[in-house]
Length: 458
Image (cartoon, rainbow, N blue to C red; front, side):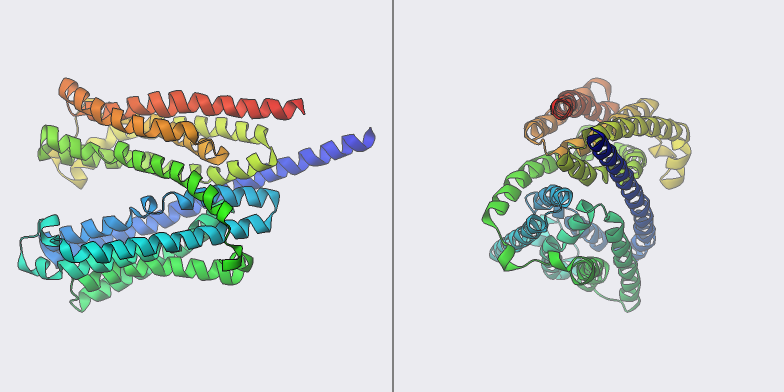
């Protein structure tokens, strides 16, 4: 009896230590991510005025559009990177190197296949498309540089697909801070190379290589560090390629992918709806207000996202009490932070908007409070999403996400006509409350309780 008691105490002590270690890693990743995003934001503040003045209106607009293409990399991999996170976190908890090797190698070669298919498709459709019409280019300098600029940007997009794997490995091992350091190096190299390109009067294609292509240096360095020094045993090899692992990665990845696309429809359509319903005069006010309130979730999200692999690892170990406690704390912190930070934004947003844009762009009070409500609900919904992702309970989310996206568009149009521009922001909050917190939140909490009860009965 004494022996069993000692074993229980040792197991409980190990569980507590692992819980503390998870929180330390989440905190370290969050702090590093914030610092790196600060560097990236600062680089953007320096780069945008430089390129805007150098390229002038049309070519600068083209620069922004092509640059945004690279930010859509997450929806081109069919959710493989996200499913790899869960697979590696589970393998780490079970200390099973073979599963980890098979997951990484399978995901890597699937990514290469997707990249090859996208490249072939692009080569087929590239000559038949009038890119000047696609981007509505009217001036001669931009027309001359259009074709080669699109081609270069697409090549960079394809290269980034397999290079996205190291970031997921770092994240799954709860060492995302290491990837963020390499990302910061890439951002600084990008800024320096962009300044040099402008100094030598480079054309738009060279500027794209200097500004966006050099960002890949951070990904390359992180890949070298990971596979040549830190975790050599995870280097992708043909012998570790596993069809069953591929099937699981794709099946889970598609569920993540549907949620990703739906999230874009939910959060990236507001400005389009505002412009269509109220005209471009309202877009500046809505857009700058949205960006300011996005900083609230943006800041907290740097920490919350680290809970995803932590939940997966704890789930594999059956450490559900830690998951429950951490989830409750994340909800409390998210609500408190977003409510307080949002209220401060309501107070100071007139001065901030006037400073950043002009007095005409200062938002109406009703829009500010609609943004506050949506921001608070969004930050709390982030916590729910990390628990859903971490536990791998994606089926309901796969159904609810598209329904939520469509409902948001319909409700935005209705409330926009009914109460004005604030109705567009309010509709997003209502859909988050109903689908992300209501249906999805209650479902994942019940599933977590069920797992806790099953462990207690053992």
